[in-house]
Picture 1 (spheres, helix red, strand yellow):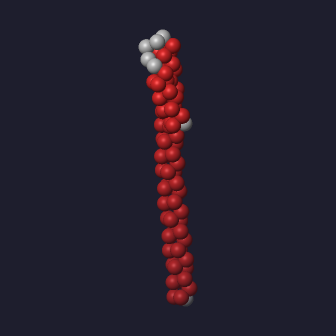
Picture 2 (cartoon, helix red, strand yellow; picture 1 turned 180 degrees about the vertical axis):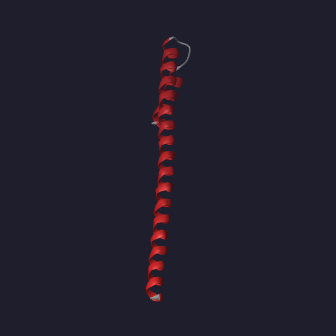
Picture 3 (cartoon, helix red, strand yellow; picture 1 turned 60 degrees about the vertical axis):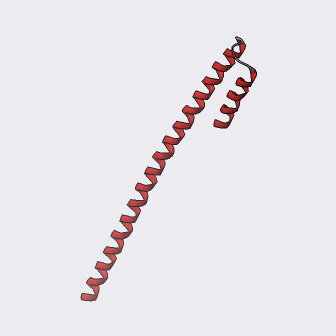
Length: 82
């Protein structure tokens, strides 16, 4: 009878341990996913800002305010960001 009860307690403890481990894995994966979502949003916004900067530089180039080198730099920055 004691052996049976000890086996039952051991099984219960093992179950709780596995359950806790699974919960910890789920929580860790959730936070990693949220971090990736934040990174992805940051990358999208950075690309948008580089696109806007390129448009501005191209407009300044067309008006003769800056040289072609500045346009080339802005294009390279956008390409590197992408």
